Length: 553
Image 1 (cartoon, rainbow, N blue to C red):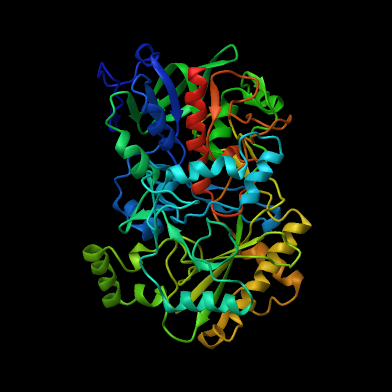
Image 2 (image 1 turned 45 degrees about the horizontal axis):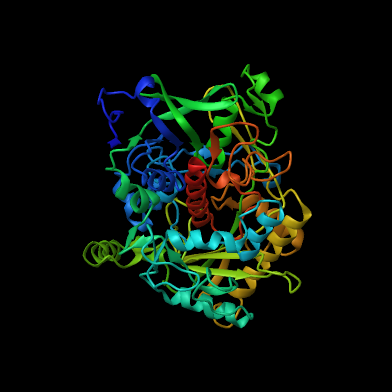
């Protein structure tokens, strides 16, 4: 049963979920995002199990959620985005960055750029080498396949019939084709599948979309399951803390419409609130660095120092090139007739620029021949703006964005107060290591090299950002500190592992406690080499099997 404008139970429908009725829940999932919607679907597939899904945001009614290019309208929108902001970051010359995170059914899968990338085989093999049994590439590949409904059909790497639609771009542009050709001039091979046998290459992204509409986890996983009588979904419900009896999680306390409520369960509480929300909830519940919690007069249930640590993110350097001819989206958006035609093309045919993801062309490349695997990812956008999600420039330009795939820098998330409504302090600690600085500068140089090829150079009038005055490595690094932005991939703050800094074990159970797991991007011990939405969905698919298996044990 879905409970939207008022919380309901199954039965009685009393208007609010009461503690006594909620005691019958087998699972409480906190957060209906990329992971939480997957769990709600898979766990409620057992009709004997009662599942409660709590979401702090609302329903995915905003029509811009479902139009792929609508992320321009949903990011930085308090109705759909938590609108987090980092603390001043030393590595960025004291700048604070906006960190969008979805606050709606589907979470960030409802407001992200729709780009479907899994990462490298070596990423998951490293997880296994760090002591996480069952997380090698061969272990996780079946879950990527199970989740997928691949437009191109199934093979050894792809699946059909899964909840998550994965489709080709429905628009191609001359500029994008030329960028791929230009990368080829530098020895970067063309690629039509970054999620198959090899990642390296240049080509078009695939999108989590079907027939020109976004396929969030709310659409792909939650919509088919929401009418099950054993699934209760409560929106506008902000979880404040996990309730413990001794060291066992027995429920959650949450706030809805200025009312304090509780929901209890006889099975497990599963936090899927993301790399910011999950560690915050743990710390508010008395699970985390003991000294920090005591400073806020939070009773310490379990001193677990790794909570909130190990924060990682991809930092993108967005280089903007002005073009000599009007071949970019900027020109279409600022032309009233072309803008109208774009809308009509989408309304009647589900094609055209409104079907675009956040980027069109992807390049995975090595900055040095010694790199064993690609260490840089490009996101080419045939448009330009001062910041992602803001209005486009009124001149013709495109953006060549690069990010270091495996940053060494580690940040931290810390409480500001003992209250859930107060956002935590986010310290990304970008560009803190020499390696990160070197690879970032090398990526900028590679971006310039592609722009200087015989294929692209005739189209380019000038480098707008950072500009050719940034010539030396030191000047490029300084430019990166001044213009870089997050690429929205925070992970790692509830690290999976066997060591003392880990928060969860290989079955995603919070170490030292019972009845509590974390299932989202926060459990990644290291950041994957690419976009993080598909890996987060995989994590939830695998976790659902482990949870169901443990319940039968």
